[in-house]
Image (tube, rainbow, N blue to C red; front, side, top):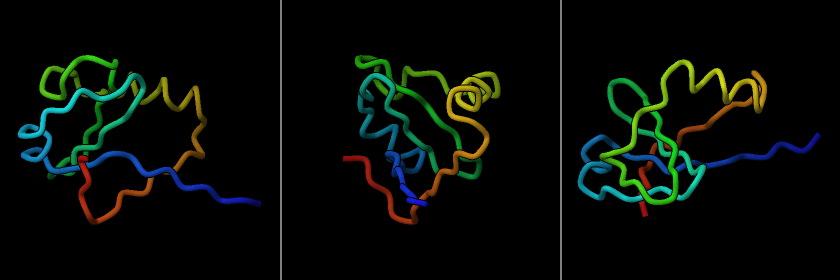
Length: 80
């Protein structure tokens, strides 16, 4: 069995707010605060204007990729 790891863009709430990038379409960004939250890009909307993915959005991801998908969040932040 081959194990593959996907690293997602991640940063603190302040880092995201200050850099305010536009995520590529389908690109996921992780906000590492007291509560871990996610946003998904549409290709043109900046981070500060994107909505957070809620439970309904997570259920769509589970349906698409299954419950076995695991995300590993590194300790270092990388927004660039």
